[in-house]
Image 1 (cartoon, rainbow, N blue to C red):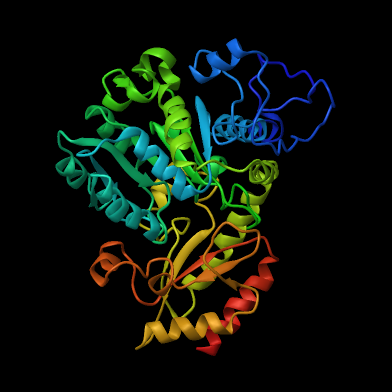
Image 2 (image 1 turned 60 degrees about the vertical axis):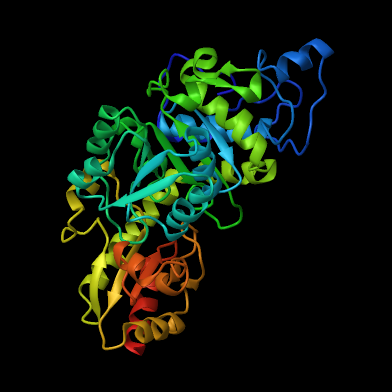
Length: 430
């Protein structure tokens, strides 16, 4: 595939391996090279001036763009079937860059209240410093979504599969609500990955990932990425359509059309915040993408077996996995994630003191690693109330659907029987 046929509609796995890169003419390197450089030589003063004036596309400085990072961006944009992508230093940075590009002081966001604790903290506390207000609603209550939207609302925000409750958002319905209110729908697709769900094909306008998780897949690099659909009309959206003082009053929508949001995110927000992805991490994330579908199939297979086992155990109060028929989100999971709803889910332990039971359970595990991450090839476990969500008040925990004894699992690629054995002996220990 050294000369890919641009007319053919290639399958997911082919694009997983080839999108965004062809062997370069100088070295013939089959793998994407690591361009570990800060800067690039300009052909001429005129060419340099055109680059800085955004009249020419090319490499200026790795804080803005880099050939290795560009290959990663093009590949994941292809897998999500988006118009383009901008990579960032982390998933949290992807959120921040998106919002700082879209919003101005005084603007508001309406978001699902079932969000990762770090996301909620960023929305509540960091956004407040920027003069932006976030309102949180029950993701299943569309009357609440509509009631929270007002003339200052500039975006709706939700996760495909919420962390750690396992609820699944109705993307198409939420996208229609966003369209009717002239604001983009932003979906964090981290838990589903482009293989299990493509939110942009269900009406979402922007898809985000903490690429640190399943995209990289091996717990060795932190990164984030923003993918845009190219379908939202930014012609009347202030921050994209109005003149930009940062570029001599250039209008990003008029100049770049459907790429206006991504260009502004890259050359203004990422440039000014310094939240760029390193070329080496981009290279590692590309390696992760090349095995994404194979890994996700195994992740989902293991997760389903473990969720069914836990659901039948007398020590377990509940299992919040949308792949189970008992889940209230099962039908939505089948619609949006037909290959399976990921491999991260939570369950609750029975007992008079669920916090103590959770502590003893985690201490008794052998194969599961107790750490603050998900989406690793290895199986992971954590107690959200005392770790990932500990910065939330008791009221915020309840609002986020988290109870004191909740255990979150990220199911890896180990032998299924070994994982079941480890969970069983830990449950017996409590």
